[in-house]
Image (cartoon, rainbow, N blue to C red; front, side, top):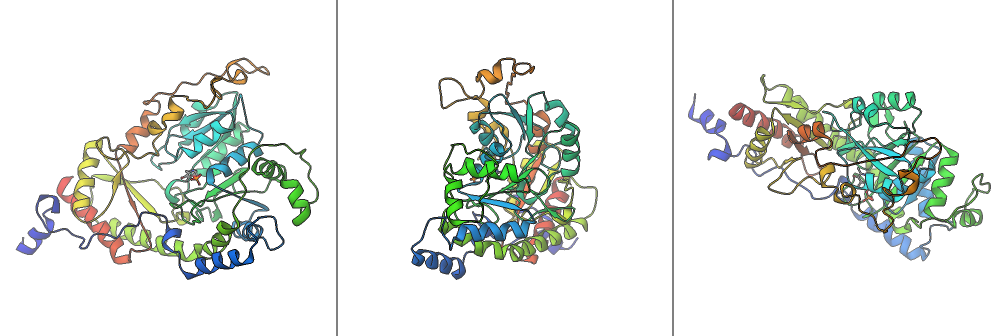
Length: 442
Ligand SMILES: *Cc1c(COP(=O)(O)O)cnc(C)c1O
């Protein structure tokens, strides 16, 4: 072996030369935040100068954004709100879900998903994930009870969940599906945009998402009745304002009063610009991920890891990738070695450092069944704890070890992200760094 090769195969962790110098560039927000330029600035300035910052006005930026988003998604109705969590809450109210009901969520998602369920007075039921890092369809039948009123698959990190199997089970049990696409704006499944397979889909526009206005959310659906109820949940005065300023005259739903999640005109002006950038952003990240996977597939076998399962690679946003090592200790060692090579990465489970807060174990308020009210709502709500309408009493218990298979998968996972600052060469080097570490440590 030449001196050069020896030099190159020695891990940076063990004093060798890092394979990637300088390290792969990182960015602490989502693609959308990194893409902000004079176009967003101009849109904000114009909106301010219009001196009309209320969403219900004849020149409404929000209305225009809703139309443009609905067109891009290919749905009849879109409702802009102030956050992704609000959009989930509106979707749940749209389906009439509340006290006494259960909603199934995956063990790996941002706390907003179970929190939205609790916020409408329903009880979140946590289901296992599989090697897609999304909801495991095989575990769904174990979690379905007579009280189950919805299933919320989450398309984590731009990767479409196993929709085919999830929808099949949901249909068998006649349970509606709400797709949480907060992290997967523009992802597709069998060529159709995610969020359009279930009864409703939601996007989030917080700082970390694929498109952003700092904060914001969108609910979209083809169901008129669900949409009306979501509108009412987002703003009790919605029918009045719409009658004055927008095209909706007829409401089949009697109005009810709930929250005010009204969208901001400034956010909507930004989001109209961001939406036009979506295609370019995802083209970049998809190219990076394709390059990365191509290079990885050239590496010799056997390997000390498996790739995350992706049900429909074509629909993947390409903003992330994950490998699953054979055991948790190996994952820690790989991650450490990869970082030394100049490849920033994280293990999902990191007991010593910063834990991945998307793991259900870290949803303290849910696991402890904490309530904002002494009545213990929603877990102690009599609609839940007593037999009702021929339903047996509900009784949920949460354990930190309640989803052991999810923990076992997450403890072995190492996650990488792709961002706008990276070139195809970075993507190639990432794969080579993995191969180098794998050859040295496997
Ligand atoms: C970001 C996110 C949400 C909603 O978040 P907001 O901060 O309320 O916009 C919901 N679900 C998932 C999976 C998310 O990542």
